[in-house]
Length: 431
Image (cartoon, rainbow, N blue to C red; front, side, top):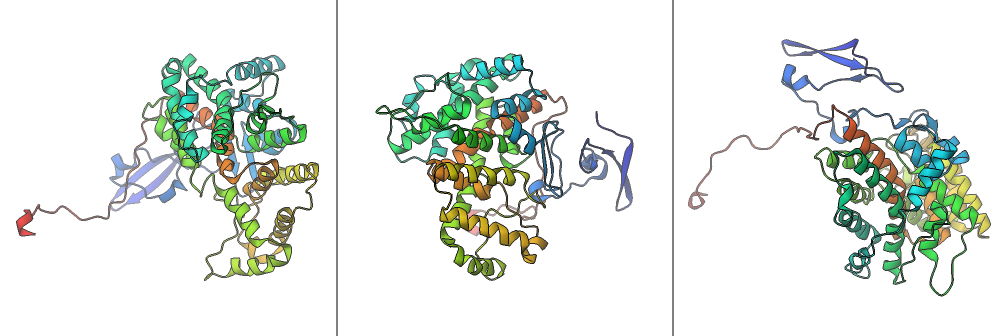
């Protein structure tokens, strides 16, 4: 429950307005401005909503100053080391780590829903052969309400549960089939004897002529990537899902909206931009040139993969990702990969250089993830779809929480209007 004991007093011209304040479990106190317009006849102005809490949530907590990310109170470092993605999915969805029996039941339910409705193959084939996988995912997920109409009633808790399981289970199949379609290869069906990440890798890289033996190190690296991206509080795509859901839209439409938002290069496309930057630098000896350019205010070049909207300290996900990069490239025999060497040297310099330290430009999760995915064999066009399938559980958890919140209303931000005042209409012949 929120604490309403504290008050904030706001003087607006000749009027004094008292606003309740709430103390969260973790993080700064919050001023409740819901009655500010009614009592003070003013709005707040907060472009990007960087100082505005849009909801009450129990799912994810971020402390950007300390570099902390918690899922339901559990540290991301510990979860990445000791847990696995489907256990993390259960945690995000239901609020606590499962017992062995609960986990087995959950994994079985997800595994049994990984196949897509057979008619959906026709939907894939309606796209151009060179369609971007993200375009396909937006369309396919949005169309799921037509194929699974028995789980679209948001007022029915059981239908919400079925929709959640279906999307978590089917998103790897959708992403893999989007990839297969984009490269002109046959679709590969999921297999119930494989774990979640191994199943995804096999559906992406197996062909009818020969099967794909999933390496456990690659599978573990993919599982970690999914875990690290599972949720991240009220980011742009999550806020999009919540905003769409606040209108009463069905869950498939809401998740499709989230995927569309994630497609933006400032959000889900950052790891692709980072990899392209590392390729542009090319070799370690060219790093000083690019460091100099990054410091030049008149040069448009910016170091990608450094800094974060929320984290003002080291991104805790980046540490795990760097470890995975070493393991994956070591397994593949490309640990001396030039791109990885450039990344490591760039990271070392940035962590020691006063310019980057003072501006708190630490490596973020995108810095190494692109290197890992490329080493696995994924083209850059698949980086964001993998992000989308990983984030699906977070979106669904946030959506379910929003639906169950009795205080939630349809999203309706206000504005600071700076257009013309009222004008009289002029007949066309007099203009």
